[in-house]
Amino acid sequence: METALSVLVGIFFAVAVYLMLSRYIIRILLGVAVLGNAVNLLIFTAGRITREVPPIIPKGQDTLDLATANPLPQALILTAIVISFSFFAFLLVLAFRSYQELGTDDTVHMRSAEPVKIIDPPLGY
Image (cartoon, rainbow, N blue to C red; front, side, top):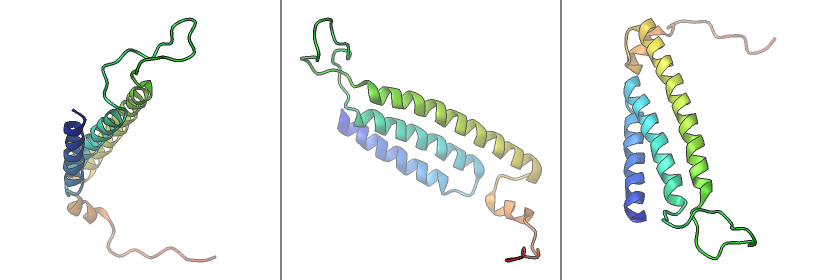
């Protein structure tokens, strides 16, 4: 099971890098979303996938005798989901606003918004 998920993580990372190397903003945004999911799946896979008992220590014991589920990867993934969603929402609004201003989502054509001949700022005062 972990081997299949490791291969899936590799595929997610490859797809994310491929999409982020595109020149269109929408593909870049989708690449960022896939990258966030790849990182979440990587943390989940690294935290050992087990179907064991929950990590609750009964009264009168200091440790558990059985193997338990690790709650740390689950907490990290929940935090990462919230952060990646807010980051994606910010990038989506930023891309939409740049499309409204420039009329294109092609990053090559977005360079035409930069002035061609500008005077460099002074290097010293």
